[in-house]
Amino acid sequence: MKSEVFRFLYFLLLLSCISSFVSEFHTKDKSYLYADAGISEIQNKQNDFLSSYVLFWKSLIFESGGKTDNGETVYSHIGSRFFSTLHLAIFSIFFGSFFAFGISLAATYFRSKILYDFVSFSSNLILSTPVFIVAILLLIVFFYRLDLFPPGGYEFGNTYYVVLPGITLGSRIYARLSLYLLPEIRKEADSKYVQLLLTRSYPWGHIIGKEVFLKVLPIALILLVLDFGSLLSGAMVVEEIFFFPGVGKSLYYSIKSMDTQLLATLLMYSGILFYVLNRIGFYLQRFFSGGI
Image (tube, rainbow, N blue to C red; front, top):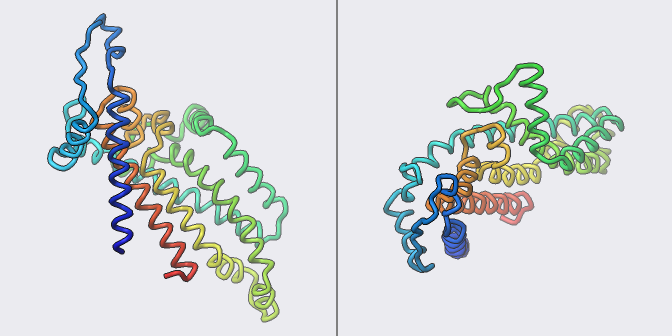
């Protein structure tokens, strides 16, 4: 436990230095933002790195993250975006894992080479297709052609608004998880343990739906935890396409508008979140492998 605390403190120190440096370096010169307004001389306040770093921690601890360029506190801004991102992440995880487990188990249950090849082909196709292409195709089919779902936006707690961006992100979770599940499920189905269960007249459905499922579940859970961390950190491209008011869109806005305080705090938020969920995945792996 003590080593884990020190590990986190070292990581926090490094992350805070990177966040402060990157945000200050990126936002050093804002003059081009005012070019359209005919303003040629912009006074940029420049601090040395140590001063900027101290001010960064002061704003994090005592000033609710400081102020965004819009005048709201950074913490309240992130807090207002967090639930929508959480909602989107949960939908994406459930969508991707449901289809990955369902179709992969079905391919083995029915011993269907056609279904197996379909899952493998669709997974590789999805992963080789840029995410913005998937998003645009979904908009064309489900909004423009069928008029089933809104093209973007979000209402608090309304899943209707997370379907299209959720499918876009969930499809990649389905693809990554399926490429792991397909060979693992087949290997478990061909194992001596399963052959023993068959000789003892265990139903094939019970073997696949319970015994094999429980065998592949631990590593799949770890993969889903890592994906969940990535989604909670924000999906900039997808959230921008669907003008979804989440953390990813805020990160995109902070980069585009050179909002120093917001960018630095979002980098800290994303880094800490991803670190914590990665460590959870690490301890889950140790637990399932008998290391704890």
